[in-house]
Length: 414
Image 1 (cartoon, rainbow, N blue to C red):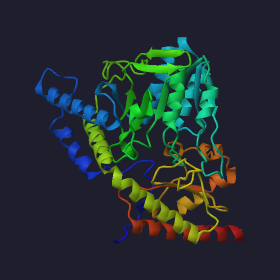
Image 2: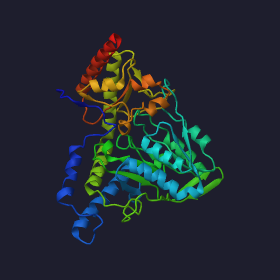
Image 3: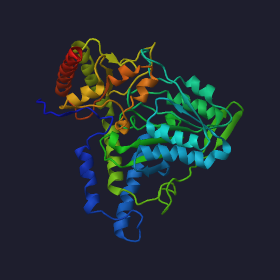
Image 4: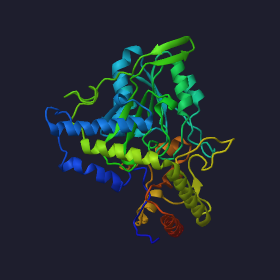
């Protein structure tokens, strides 16, 4: 199969909309264009029916009830609604929030905002490089950090830079035993891994359509509305549904949690995208893992001193931590990652999270793994996706090796 540069290997930042998703969305721009809140006529009723159907599809994909799905503009809004919404509503019950040093800025920044307002925030460290479990959070640290004042724990399922998968179900069990809600940013996991809110035991879960071949500008927040039975240290008790304070005031859409006219085409696209991703996951995940291994093997052959950032690519009994199948994060010693990225005009990669690309500071995730600033700045993130081929991976290996060699020569001359 021929390669047609430029090659897109930045699928953690965003993905191309699948043509099947686009086809499903198109009628809702010009044919079924009513406001889903205007149910006094057929135009609005058709739009509402589409939203209701999408809500059912999305809920089924993650093991939730339709009423537990709240549509948002994306995971950043979902994270803010979960964290700030719960803190604002439940502050009388506590003042302590727990998260992880490697979380996305869409979690860390709301926590910083709350800290400025007097909340106490604890950020837990992760396993350091060069451990094959680098980036993993030991659930025991959560157990030790939770106290009687803890209001919320927030831990992401899959890291957006090094792909590490956290032990969410184990963390959730700890939180349940202490009566503390657990929020999970699952933005990088939904559509790529099996995600079931009941199996995970989470109370709140965020995700975005554009991470799994849906449109940008639409996402959802799972908010547990059922009662839950806890078997805590003080005996069995019943925990009520999660209640949040809305961040936006207006028409009271989305059960009063997110006012604003619903993005019907986007919501339809979100539903189709997640349905396709779940249906094709059993074949797509191993395909991406094989492509990722092909990329890493090629890089190691051409650049022997390249360093793998994050957990091992092959989980074992002694190193059970694993990572997203399409994720690879590599440090190239002696090379500035930004310079390398800019020199490779025919390959789209990144030096970290897309949401912090305007920030000249080195990746906070890699620094939290114990990398020095030089190695952090020498690192690139490769995100493989649905439309990548083996030939593109081979092309990428050649291009990376060629440019690393050229930059190192220039550095030695200088």
